[in-house]
Length: 184
Length: 104
Image 1 (cartoon, chains in turn blue, cyan):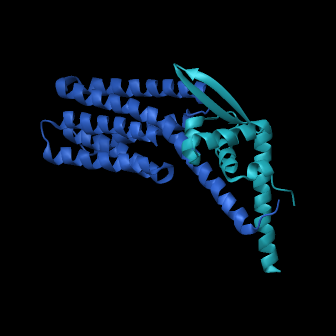
Image 2: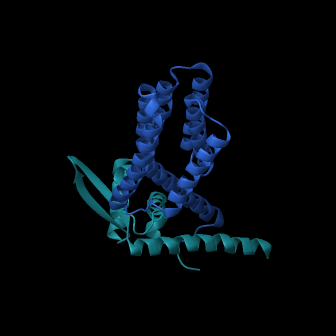
Image 3: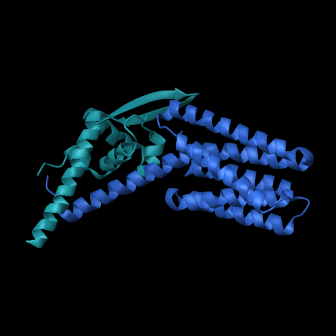
């Protein structure tokens, strides 16, 4: 069978495009589970902080511990199903460095009000989603920018109801975003 | 120059093999529904071309029940991955040869 270079080039373009879509779809399928889990935890963290503000620090510590443990569990379960590794020790190190820098910034920036702290962490996480989305896929950019905008609305216009708002838009937004990624 | 693989060269089969080869060799393959979405094929068309690839030994088809729902998973074999790699190399050779002819 003989084909010319134009047909060969078209075939290779098709191969590359399909490979790109498979990679993106695989990333969406696997990462959406992490995003939904963290969405539920963030919603719980915000609601418990609203209901019991004096213990908010403990609740958020519990959220992070549950999130990391849950992420390990999801990674192990998805590996057993797909044989694709999602755990990489570099991810854990990057996450811990990310958290450490966030704490450092909160201390240095004297963020003391719960609304300031809540806004900072949401914007900080969504910045990573948005930047990561430039490489990984548009769903991350859409989630990152939407939650950033809704967080800022909460910060500037909602005072006492900030945490329930964040439970809805940050936690709920991540859950919806994760479900949307699974449909894509 | 090596010949193009007649089985893989058909457009939908090329898409199927490209999709399956994009996964790591140890990965569990792709579900039929996901493959359908990725290739944009109809059920019947996709099923027929997967059967052709399976008869050539390029893919394996695994049918199972997840709960009460039937699930078909298609995985590229080592033979299929090799054939696909050779096919892609031949396509690249055709483009390179054309480039050399244009320069001469």
